Image (cartoon, one colour):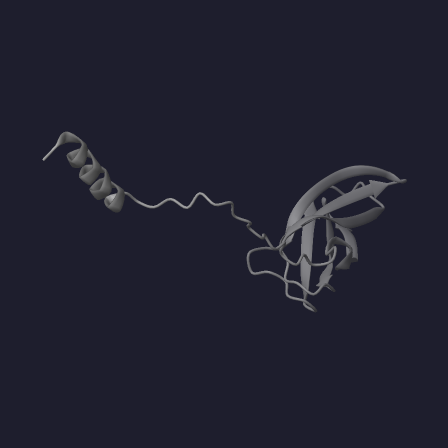
Length: 129
């Protein structure tokens, strides 16, 4: 067998065993997930009580999900004010891993070690979908 024929046969055998790579250009279509409307403004936060007793002030309220999606880990900022100036703030989870489905409400409560306030307020800080 001549050397040229042997090389040609070897190339043929190796070509048959080698993986075939498709080098033609590809178009990949990525579909954007359908994002819900801005949920932030559809989570209703209400303060239902602000009571000072002994050395503590308790603020409580409700959160209602008016959106079309379940929210998780919703954080609220709670604050005490006196004469229009904020004197203390803190934060809490109104909803955790259990989630708050569309139309559902939950109660929340927080206690400050302070009675130096004439007003309480709560606002939404963050949430996950």
